[in-house]
Length: 111
Image (tube, rainbow, N blue to C red; front, side, top):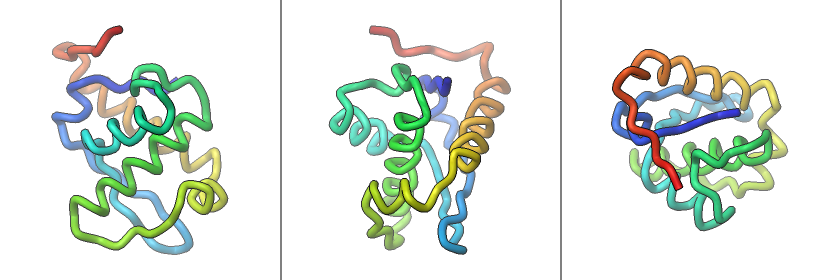
């Protein structure tokens, strides 16, 4: 399970994902969290599976590209066809590793 907290957004952790030979930066942004909520009705802390994680990763890649002024015109279905469960797992592990570094001062969003 991938858990996100307010500190995840603040710390600006950046990773990359390679899709069709192109590396895209991935940062956790408020825009991605809002898009995920609007699409799923769930908050980030409610992510409960691979499909939710894939959708969150998609919104993060898209929002990062938009924030950086880069083109990213892939729709979610195309994105999901091109990423693998291993890609999503690596991203989740990177997020969780970064979270573990600052876990002592985390403020978790609760319902």
